Length: 231
Image (cartoon, rainbow, N blue to C red; front, side):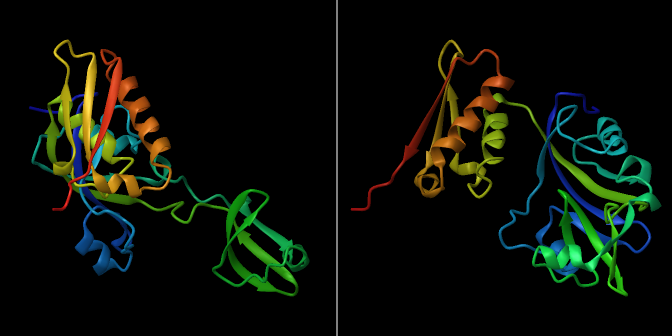
């Protein structure tokens, strides 16, 4: 059975540049380490995607809408559907004095911020700095290889994974969700470690707001932090 807009899925994927097969993004820890893009603060696991709502490249979304649960997906994203074609008008030359005035010593390949826009330094010569304001992946065709791990079917599970967008390091089996008899209230049980999150109150408010926006029948979300007492 193919997927539809509004479906919640867990999608495991890797994005590479077609020209050289360079990995630029992945949900797989081993792949990230092998590609030299591993970040310890990142949580590597299948990503929650809400079809028709999660921002995706158009060809990828179309491929997912024609995919099946458990099936592999591979799709090319041409430049015009990804980060655009390279635009020569976005290559600009500035005096090096502009950088020194702000205490910046530019170097080739540095990424700098000029008037709110990011640019890569591509050359420095004769007191002039040449900057490229194109996205680093402009003009590149990307390839997404992945798998629809599974489709989330119960509201309880959907809420668990929505909450994990705000607290990704909490394993899904440590979050439980139950509903009142009339379905107007949800109780979310969380482990004690969430109390160590900075600004946990704001995080819970944001999570509750998103849950409420997606489940119109809910009038209240109760969060319960469970602390196991050591005897």
